[in-house]
Each structure stands twice: as structure tokens, then as C-alpha cells.
Image 1 (cartoon, helix red, strand yellow):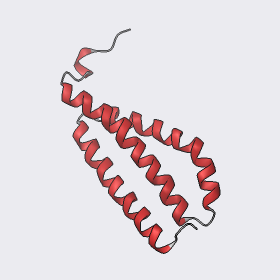
Image 2 (cartoon, rainbow, N blue to C red):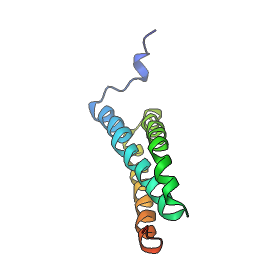
Image 3 (cartoon, rainbow, N blue to C red):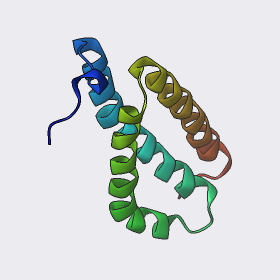
Length: 100
């Protein structure tokens, strides 16, 4: 059964923003999340080993999320805020808990 046309987005910009937010933004968030966990948790080797599997799972979840919203630019805003927060956690993690 095909999808109902009134629920589909006709704008190319919205489609591109959802796709790029899911793929690019989702990957950056999942990578920064695992890096922040590695800096702030005591055993970083276990985080890096399990990130091979969990990074993909988190990324797939973050690819689906933009398609739940009607406006993709709001999703990009949320993703950019999360990226900035996680980048700050990684930055301060490098300063206070460096991995040697």
C-alpha cells in the first residue's frame, strides 16, 4: 500500500535537510558521544572496543529521528546543540582526563 501523499514532503530542501541531518549529524553525534564517554569514564579501552558496535546502533537511531519531525531545520538545530555540548565534553575531557 503506497504512502498517503499529504504526509510526504514535497520540498527538496526539507528532504535534503532530513537526510543530511540523519546521516552527517547523526554520525557526528554518535562519534562525539563515544569519545566523550572514553574521556570521562575510567576504562577508556572498553569504550573504544564496544564503540565499534554501539556507534553503528546509535547512528541508525539518529538517522531515523529527523523523519519523525515535520521541519528538518529544527532537527538540525537540536543536533547542532547536541554536537556543541558533546564537543565541549570532549574538549574538557582532554584537558582534565587525558588518555595516555
